[in-house]
Length: 548
Image 1 (tube, one colour):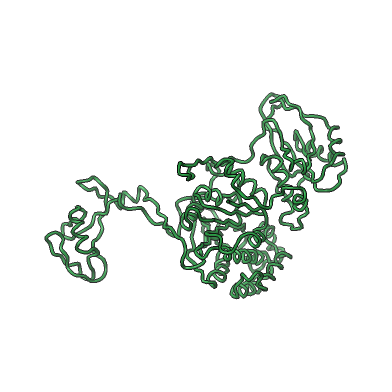
Image 2 (cartoon, rainbow, N blue to C red):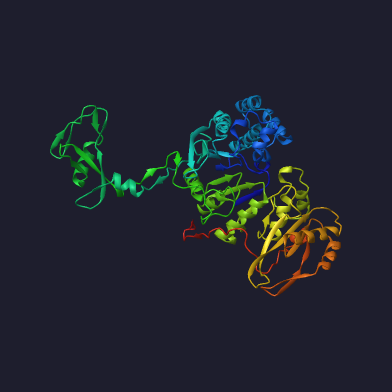
């Protein structure tokens, strides 16, 4: 059974993921590569915050970071090595308690748990960028290698063809650090077919008899060896070399006609193109780029990775039936590719927006059956859990209740307002088709406002109406944690709106409670406009394998 967790991945890893239960873990945590690199060692003052605000917004030294540092030093859960403890305490002296150290502490906590949950034959891929890859490499070294694991590769993925970075070389690549938990691990060699230019250049010869393309390959190699018969000719290898084949194989090759002689009488081997797999994938990946706005698989998620990237990693380090973990699963590329390749999967994300997008992506691609086979954990299913989500003290997820309510009620047909403050009373927006005064087709806005208060005055409805007038919206929907009969009554004062396309009348302002949503009430708009791009549909083969 595949599993999707909504919540903090550290809590989920510690509470739900068993020791040595995962074959492959890939993570792509949020990190701002545009951070001014020179400010790494000066990350306390105003200048740093002004030049790297996006980074500081994500990673700040706060009580959460202090708690994480204390857990590392005290070897919480017994997962930290003495090397990782010394490393983090040493970095505090170098970096100070700022945004970069907060990021590294957060990663150390999670990498230690990932090492715990991997099987002895498991692999770990950490997707990052050159801004912090050198710090992350030694952190993973201190956890994995200190426990018998091994560093395998620093993979360089060329995201773009070119990029103008001003007065420096353009940064067009990401880094993927590849580690294994032990020296006995799954690795399936990945092969790329030769491109046309390579074939024309290196397999330029055509065999007169078969018409097949081949290249001429030497039959000798470095070393020392004895003379061998090539037909009736007894030939010594050139000085300092030996014939790479034994006599029996040479005799077979002569019969097959794949050994020929140059004008100087030197034997050579015809390596036919059809007998060659291609080129083995190396540690520099340049055969696919980041997704563009025109790519079919693009869903509009800002950090979405191409499926080709995850397909390569999953195929290389797992077999069918193995279990893949993505602890920062975002829009679910790892999950979707694992599903297609017949791997079991576990996904974790801290935002409901990601969870809802993943569920929609899987249903669009594989049908409702794929959703029915998922264990979903952390999503509110009753009033008690909804109230708990609304009252989360963690500042990182203070908008999660709003996202969950809006996306659940609209069945993922709304866009979330991502502003943490000063949102103007708008927590989400949906659209429906209509006609304007000139009878031209237009999209009309529907605004959502979310409130978790136990009591609300009728003025809330008046404020929502004012926001609708300011934004030119057709409808307003107030989503409340608790039932508000007084506000339901107040809404009637604002009349109805008629949709000209459908000739349908509906309340201009409506109040919907969480209990109604849990009971199954959903947004019912005439001709709603899809705000998320549909994932491309996949199908199953007769053997139960998923393919495009």
